[in-house]
Length: 113
Ligand code: AMP
Image (tube, rainbow, N blue to C red; front, top):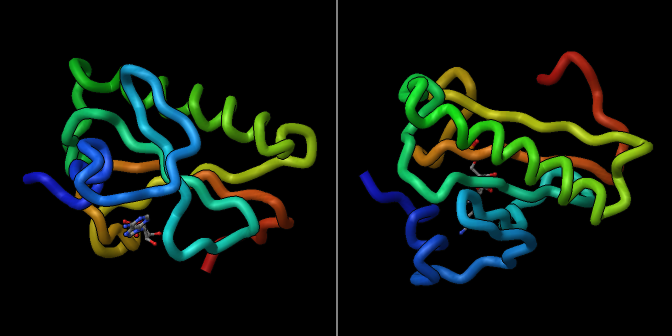
C-alpha cells in the first residue's frame, strides 16, 4: 500500500532531499534524533523487512551504498555513524515502506533503548 514515502518519491509531499539515484531516495528525517538523521528509501514499495525476497534484495545493497556515500558527504566516515532499520511494532516501525535511518554527528550509545 502506498505510504507517505511513496508521495515523497513522487514529490507530492515535500522533503529535504539529500541524495537520489535510479534505485533510492534519501531525505532528512522530520524529527531528527541526531545532528544528522537521514532516511534512505528504495524507489519501490516494500512494506517491511519481512517482505524482502531474492528478487528485491538488491535494493538493500543500494541503500547501504547510499548510506556510505551520504555519510562521507556529511563528514562522518572516520568518526562513525549508525544505520538502523526498524521492523513492525516491536522494532518501532511507523512508516510501512522500508527505510534506513542514517544517524551521526554525535556518539551513539549501545545497547539502544
Ligand atoms: P520508523 O519509525 O522506523 O518507521 O521511521 C519513520 C521515520 O519517518 C520517523 O523517524 C519519522 O520522524 C519520519 N518521518 C515521518 N514523516 C516524515 C516526513 N514527512 N518527512 C520526513 N521524515 C518523516
